[in-house]
Length: 151
Image (cartoon, rainbow, N blue to C red; front, side, top):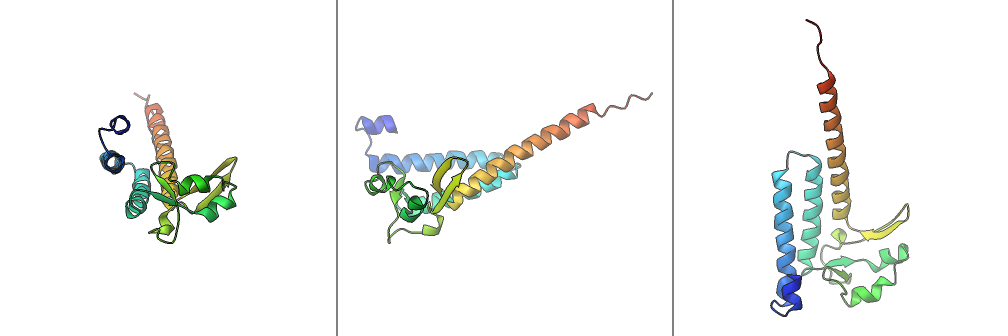
């Protein structure tokens, strides 16, 4: 899509939503195909929340100026006003589903950002999936070592 857009073959107004929809469908299929992994249900919920707010705001994730100030990232406000990337925009009074937008200021161990509730669900789901995989591997390893040597 980026190549076609840069060559003038597809208008950005068509390529952006098309690419976002394709990503949503492909990731959604991957989540569905692996639905036996319980942690991925949170990933799916996060994906749904983020997709909902992005589609409700015509393909853009609103970002709170207040939250940006709280984490010292106010230099991004002019960039967001100009929609410098294909996803984010500055939140305003016409932003829909603002409570699902990037409104949570985060400063943890040198990580500074403004995230959404969907991002929280995504991170929780990833952590639970990794933890679940590690615990399952440990269980399998312990079962493999449980050998009855008596004859």
